[in-house]
Image (cartoon, rainbow, N blue to C red; front, side, top):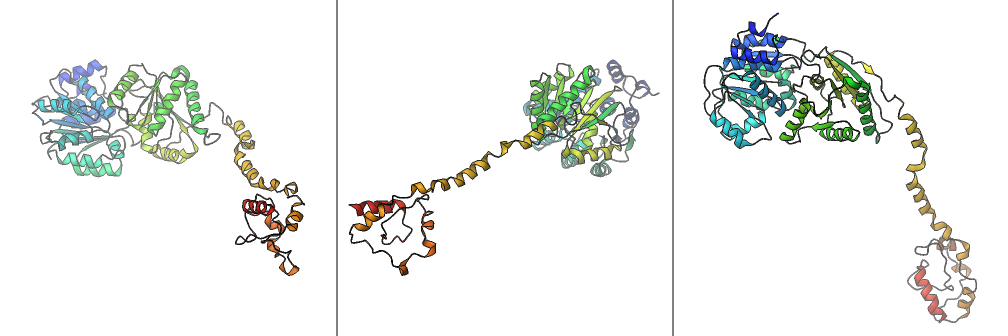
Length: 498
């Protein structure tokens, strides 16, 4: 079996590695370090959690042992897709290069440009950066990449998912053609293969596991979930998550809980804290200093649950994570491999449990197709019919019908008002008929009888009368026709009496 001491690594590097407690390289390290030390380009494909970071950090430190950095001209460049992964690479560099005089600078968003400029101006051997922040410095004229001898692209497939491929191509064009390139990824998408064919020269390809395979040390399972109703589904899903955590008991010492949306990260974290579970959120909208404190608390076991978006799915090396809970089935099947890769690291065992709702079934099929295995179905600890008894009475209750009832009542209210007791007194007609008036008209002859459409039944529904009839003493108000408003007819009657 190969040991680190059998490789041509610098003695100072070997001393630092021994202090970390490792003496035997992982398969990706065993395959990538020798050709990297020879100066060859390397294309490394391995599932997450297999030690890819050390596979390029150790030979890079050895190769940079000779030479001196110049101002604004780094000697090597490491690109990482997220701030957390870039910070982790920087930590690895500090651990393995502590007996050397090599310097580094970390260029990530959320930190001061001024502080980063000071480090660059002094000259650094290793520049670790995210693509966006690196391009910001290049556009400001603060960096020159013509002295880069070693270029590393870590988690290349995540770069593709985050839309960084155009940025990667632009950065490659600014580096010398003679550079050595180390390219690492967990999966190999066609776009990534195109880039490797363009920018790598006869690389040594190390594929220690089939692309997109999951660690055999991880026990996987999925719970099929269906809420009792759409409004209640989110709360019931969070209750299911708590039940799954409780079912794991003492075996779940800490866990990362992944959500697809940043808003759900905050909601799930608040919900867990409400019920007494020690949890904190981490996603891209949080300030970098806050994210750093949260990760440090989780690493130091001061925080039991880390609720995260996919910003934490790649490259975070927290060896003692016992469980990963996928609150949502990831939208991209490749993310499932990286999410559950946060547990079962460095030879340890781990557990990954996923919740699949009705809208996630297609995503679940994509995940199983990618890993070429069916994920075992787990029993719902709350019971499959937990919410069914609550939903039945809800459908039978009349809670949803008050508006319809009130509307019907409103429409029928005018009808009871048109009752016989509201007809005018029978004496009104004789009194008005007996009184002479210049405007009074003789009783209508049969030929002058109103047409059927002007019968009293029609008058009862006249506008403004609300169903009431008004005797006008067989007199017409000139210019108003037979549909005279009631308030005008009433005033005319009063004047006629006087």
